[in-house]
Length: 137
Image 1 (cartoon, rainbow, N blue to C red):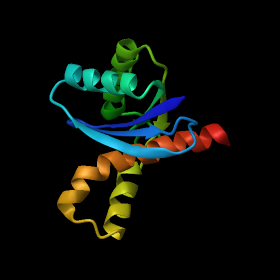
Image 2 (spheres, helix red, strand yellow; image 1 turned 90 degrees about the vertical axis):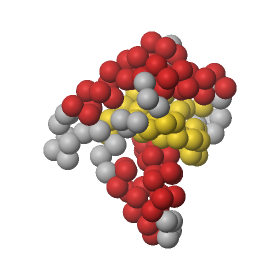
Image 3 (cartoon, rainbow, N blue to C red; image 1 turned 30 degrees about the vertical axis):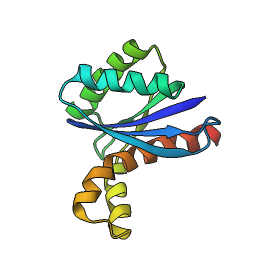
């Protein structure tokens, strides 16, 4: 049972995938998109290709825990993805995951241009790891 983890942004989606036993998370790709339909098609293809049984999406909450416009956009995207794939979708609080990913990359001396390329994917890994840890504990 593989689980797909997503960090959804305005133009980019970081994608992570669990191993078949849903124990670990690995970065898979970053999808750069212009339209929601384009992003949904790419994600549906990945779900089929990797035999995904569930999707976990980072929900961008304010530091106070309240939901803003970004969270509403992610929820609308999640609804469309659920309808497109027929797979269950769950949310994970993603506060600070992008910052944590950035700090990790800086600590590893990754150059700025390269950081931009993999930050979203690493954030998706952190989101999926958070879900896997919560589910196993």
